[in-house]
Each structure stands twice: as C-alpha cells, then as structure tokens.
Length: 499
Image (cartoon, rainbow, N blue to C red; front, side):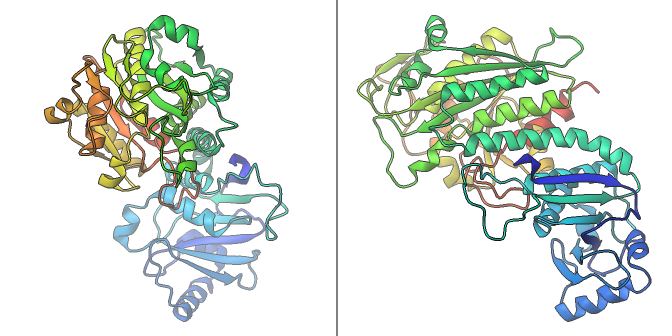
C-alpha cells in the first residue's frame, strides 16, 4: 500500500543506520560524495569486489557487499548506471524503482549522484516517485503474513543530495501523482463483490475532501437524459449503474473550458448473453481500468493544486447475463439520439462511453476530450502489453499525448481511423452496430466512439494491454497497473496548466 515505504531527503554526509547505497558508471568510479562517505579505500574496495563478482556497472545492475570497516552501515549496495550515454538518459523513476526493489523491507541511506554528475531536485523527486510505485502491494485480503515478512513494516529510504530541501519540495507534487497511481491500482485490484458500481461511486466521491466537486447520476437521472446505451449494458445486473462526474476548478478563471477525461468503468464483464469463456474471466474485474485512471488523475491534480479546470467522468456498470439482459439483435437508443443494433453484448464498453462522452461534451463544453478504456483484445494482438493504442481526430492532441507517454514511460502508438473502419459499423437496421467484426477490431471500436464526438478535439486510449496483468516493470509489480495517471498528469502539466 501507499505506506509501504517512507522517504526523506537530507544533506550529503547525513548519518543513519541500515544499508548504504552508492551509484557508479561502467568505469566504476565513485562520485565525490560517495568517496567522502566510503573514505580513501572505498573506490579500491568497490573495484576489487567488482572484479571478483564480474560486476561491470551496467545500467540497472547491483553489487551487494558487507559494509567496509569504519562505515556505519549493515551493507553496501553499489548500483550501476551504465555508460556515459546511458547516464545522460537516466530514467529516474525506473532507477528509484530498481533501488527500492533491492532494499525491500530495509532501511538505507542513498547517496544520489555518480561520476561527478549532479542530481537535480526534480531528478531526486522522480527517483522517489519510482521507489513509491515499486513498493506498492495489494495484500489487504491476506490473513497470514509470509514467514519472511518484515516485522517492522516497510522500506525506509533517506535520499542524500545537495539540493535536499528543493527535492523535498518537488517531491510533494510527485507524491500526489504516486498517490493517484496507487489509488487507481487499488481500484483495479479490488474484487467485484467489493467494488460494485455504488461502492466505486462512493470511493470516487471521496475526492470532495480535496476540493473536487462530485456529482453522482443514478438510473432515474440517466433515463431522464435518454442514456439508453449505458442502461442497456447494466440491465442484466442486480447492481444498478452509476455515472460519476468529478470537477476540479483550479484555473484562475473557473469559467475557462475544462479538460475532459472520460473512463470506462465496467466493474465486471462476463460478456453478458454473449458470455466469455471461463478461462481468464476473473481478469474482467479489471475492465474498469480506464475509470480508475480518471479517478487517480483527478486525485493527483487536486492534491498538487493544479492550475487547470478538469472534468472527469466515469460510467460504472456491471455486464451480466440474466433474464433481463440486453440481447444480440436488440436496438437501443443512445443519449445522442443515434440508434445502435447490438451484435455482441460483449462489446459493451463502447456503449457506456457513447452516453458518457455525449453528456460531457453537451454539458461542459470541454476544450478537448480523452477517453480511456480497456476496450478490445484486438489492441493487445496489435501492440502487446507495453504500449496503448491511440486514436484521435486531432493531430496536435495526439502528438502531445505521445510526447507525454514518452516522458513518463506510459507509451502509446497512434492507430488509424480510416473511412473503411467507420463503414464496417454501419447497420442494416439501425444507425450503427456495436461491432464491426473480427478484423480491425480496435479501430472499428474507436470508429464507433468517434460517432459520439462532434467537433471537439478527442483522443481514445485503448488500454486493454497495459491496464491490467501487464508486463512487470521496475515501477510496477502489481496486477493492476494504474496506467494512465502519470501520462495524463504530465500532459496537463506540460500543455494546459497555467505556469
């Protein structure tokens, strides 16, 4: 959980207990600060131990030694940063995550810097961000500790650098982002008997403590608004749907058009009448990863008092088979007035997004909209589990999202929205059908959503591969990744927030 690690900042030379961490490049030379701590024999000790263990100082490699005589430490941990070229492009969150992984459950002083290179306050804050993300675990339902569990709790890191006061200040913003990611991970990891629509809405409403205005739409209000697409998905479940609209008004002018973030929140997706196969169906508790990312992002922005207006909206439903479920061949009418022929009840997320997107652009007149959804298995076939699919009607917005993804490591790849994909969802009996068939499945799904976007710049992120059960990284060992919070926060910070 978020309290699994404690991180403080202090000046070089600070005393402390536990382990001592220093960094070296591929030439194995120590920074001046590390030499001061280890003494004249420190460099020789590291060199001799490295030769014995064939440690080359490669990026994200580690050498663990007993602490040398005269050093107040239990162990000496030497972490490689690689070549000069590697060091120039150090990914500080990844380095922080790697370091925290080597120190799990321990206390350590971490001397930031290597080969004479200075570590900025921002770099140190990013290092701390990565360490926090790596230390997350979801174990609230485990009733027994592992035999080797640390009785004293989590990891404690004392980060030592010249700009320690500035780093502590910069870390306040990165802590807000980390908290947003961890909140999203918690939501994704929760079992669906705990996180049903009403409970999800209640948790999202806790953002009011940070000054976020929250409105929860219940089924009666949805019917008044004509949200026949979302309501159709929900009608097979005993759990009633909810839409949560969250507004953070951080800009100097509260009337300024907001940024709009929209998330698919299917808390469990059985497939409905078009039921999924049993194998892997348990993963469908994570079909609300887009909604989780929106809640986490609103938490991050509000916590760090971002100077921007943002509206976040999530459609929360459960898709279940029942005597009252919607069926293949049903025709439903969305809030926009457009009609949809249901071909497959397992293509439900786009129906949810259709009504929520229409409501947001109608009610809040945003400057742009981004929706996030664990929408299609097709995007996993196309891009695997490290990159999300990006579809957009606006080149500038797409370029900015791509740049934010590169900066945070939450990478996206732009996919086409060709006329042929739009044509594939034309229906014989209604305005459109909810699936265009097997071929180009991610693109036809995006084309369906696009029919609910007017002239507003819009982007759709298909996060089915990256949002849950994604590949392990140095900053995430959780099943639920909380993907998207860092990307969206960076996008807002770089382009839409008043400086």
